[in-house]
Length: 272
Ligand SMILES: Nc1ncnc2c1ncn2[C@@H]1O[C@H](COP(=O)(O)OP(=O)(O)OP(=O)(O)O)[C@@H](O)[C@H]1O
Image 1 (cartoon, rainbow, N blue to C red):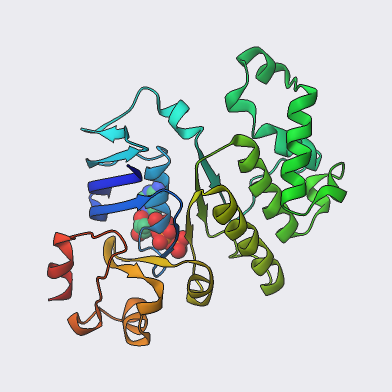
Image 2: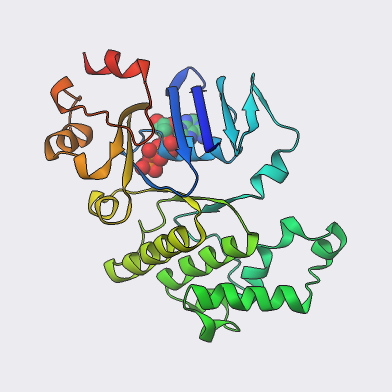
């Protein structure tokens, strides 16, 4: 069973089509880079996988259950979303709350509604939050306000929050775009260790291909809403990348060597 299964996904904003017939599979426990120039549709694709956006057509299944089908979101989309952690470029923490309280927010989707409303957490849940912070190397910052941490530390708090959420799938939308190289490395190391130790599926959008090469065995590249490449990151050629980020792709630069075979009918049209 695939963690994420996508077929025939077409997305329009008004009359402008921004995703074209996307067909992708992500097995459990893969770490995948999603790359492509600005405006190529990376964030839009991630938002669909999280059920935040609805497409004109196509289907998405999460762990075998339909999330989106025949133009409609599953009625259980909230429950499905609770299994998907989303990391934003700008951390998405509550600045005035402590680091611990921010991590506890990750449990809100899986505790009884009345306790969530009152923000009442058990001792066991607090201990879990401590443990999540220990895993991302932030035990000593538990009682500090989130706003007092550096960008890289705040992003690691966001990852601890996802651990607290007990999500199976992590979608990270440009998690290192606003970080210095040292902080970026520590955030990517943290994502990689969670992926490796807990077997979580991680899809991370990246602007720097070097990070994809270092951390992600598989890369999916988008351009103008079309999948241009889906395969082993080690096979990404400089020529392909120049074309991806420069002018239109040439057929000889296009390599489709999927980790999970994906036949993309739109690819031929784009590369002709
Ligand atoms: N809410 C929206 N309304 C209208 N158009 C949108 C909206 N969100 C995105 N778009 C358009 O959809 C296309 C894809 O945008 P998206 O943000 O997914 O690209 P991206 O690859 O994530 O870009 P970046 O790397 O700059 O974040 C762009 O042309 C963008 O202008």
